[in-house]
Image (cartoon, one colour):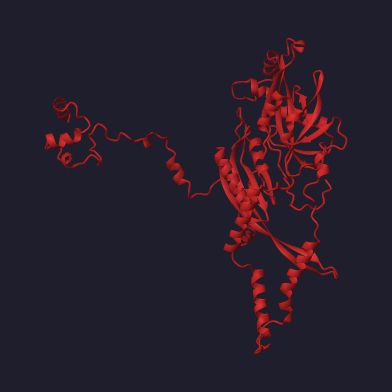
Length: 214
Length: 292
C-alpha cells in the first residue's frame, strides 16, 4: 500500500483529491482487486488508514447496556438526598388535581415540559385513578335527596427525582403563577406509601396470607 | 377572608410541605463563605472566624406575594381567539347524553302528534318526555338566580393596604421600615443573628411586620435574590462596611394578614413598585418578582 502511495505522489502531485480514482485507473493491482470496483462512496477496506475515522460511540462510558437491561424489571423509586453546596431535594411529587380533565392534563404536561426546559430530572409522570363524587341535593319540599350531578376528580403526578434548592423557589413560583382556575396543586415528598397506594389490592392473596399466618 | 361566592372558582394551594428545612445546619453565611463542599462535622469556630473577617452584615428579607384570585381579563385578540376555538370545538364535538335525550323526546313528541299513534308501542310513559326539558328549565332558572360577586371593585382596588385589591394580579407586600436614619418603603427585612438560618431570619422579619395568625408558605430554603449596599461614609466602621440583604419568596396561603400591624403595610402590583422603592433596590428586586 505504501508503495502505491509514494508512487502516486511522484506522478500526480496536485491531484490528491482524486487519489482513489487515479489509483484505480493508474495501477490496477492484483493485490487489491476491490479498489477498481469500489466507488468513492462505498466503505473502504479495513487496511485503509482512515478506516473507522468517524467512530465515537466506543469512547462513551458503558451506560447504554444497563439502561436496556432495566426496562423489563420493576422500576424502583430512587431517593436521592444530595447535600452539597447546592442542596437538592429528594424525590418530589407534584400532584395536580381537578374536575376538568383537559385542564388538569394540559397543566401537568406544562409542568413536565417546564422541567425539561430547566433540566430538572423527571423520574416519572403518571396518573392516579379518577375518583367520582356524587353531589346530592335536598329537595326543597321534602327530606329526600336527589342526585344533582357527578363530579370526577382527576389526578396527575409529576415525579421529580432531584430539584436544586436554589432552583426550587423559582420553579414553584412559575408553576403557581401559571396555575389555571379549578386546579389544585400540591408538592409533597414521595413516600413508600404513595408508591404502594398505586397498586391494586389483591384480596385472594391477602386471604391466603392471613390463612398462613393463622 | 369572608368571600362572597365568586364568579370564577377560587383556587387553593394546599399542603406545600415544608421539607428538609433543617438539613443545612450551617446558616446562609456558612454556605457562602466556605468554598469546599459542606462537611457537617466542621466546628462552628470556622464560621465565626470567617464572619470576623468579612465587613458585611447580613439581613434577610421576605418577598410575600398574594397570588391572583380570579383570572385576568382577556385582551381583544385573546377574546376573539377564544371564541374561535370554542366555535371549532363545538363544531367538532359529538352530541352529549343530555342532548341525545332531548332529541329523542322531541322525536317522541312528534310521533305522538302523528295520526297513527299507538301508545302501546311506547316503552315509557309520559313522565320521561317532560323530564328532560323540565330539567333544562330548572337549571336555567337556577343559573338566573345565581348572583356572582363583582369581579372588580373600584373602591377596594384603590385601598393600597388591603389584600383584596386587584384580584386579577399578584401583589407584593411592602413595609415601611427604619433603615439607618430614614424610613424607607422596602420588603420586610431583619438582621441575621448567630445560630439561625437565613430563612428563619426571613420568617422573623415577616412576623415583626404583620400580625400573628397569617398563614404563609415559604417557597424554599434558598434565597432568590440579593441586594448589597454600603453604609454612608459616616456610619462605616472597621467591622461593617455595608449590608447584604437576601430575599426569600413566600406565598400568602390563607386569610388577610394583620388587622393591626405594627408598621404600615402596602400591597402593590409590580408596576406600582417603582413609586415606592429606591432605584438601585428596585433594579435588584425587579429581577425575581415574576409578573405573570
